[in-house]
Image (cartoon, rainbow, N blue to C red; front, side, top):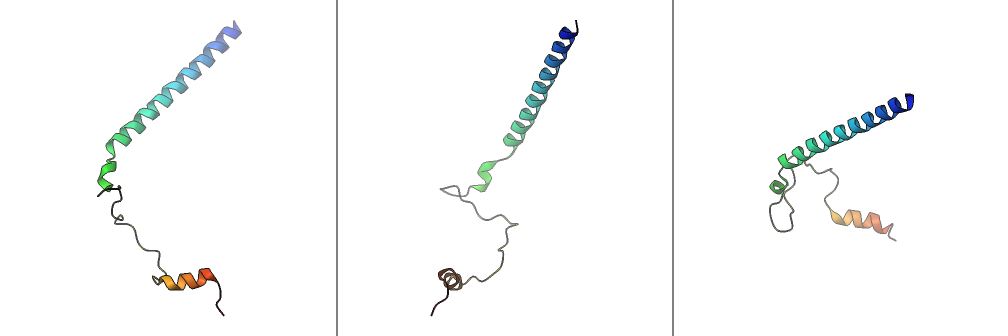
Length: 75
């Protein structure tokens, strides 16, 4: 009798887990469907413009300064 109840509880918990996972997948699919990936692709190759929130991190825009640093000290 106790074994039957234990088996029934385990099966019930497994069914509940399957139901929760199924609902989470359905919600995820709805979110993916609602998001339009093609909006960010402006031309061939799929590279769009930088988002409005993107800002340069600062630093020098001079590439030669970085090259000297990368090559090490000269002399």
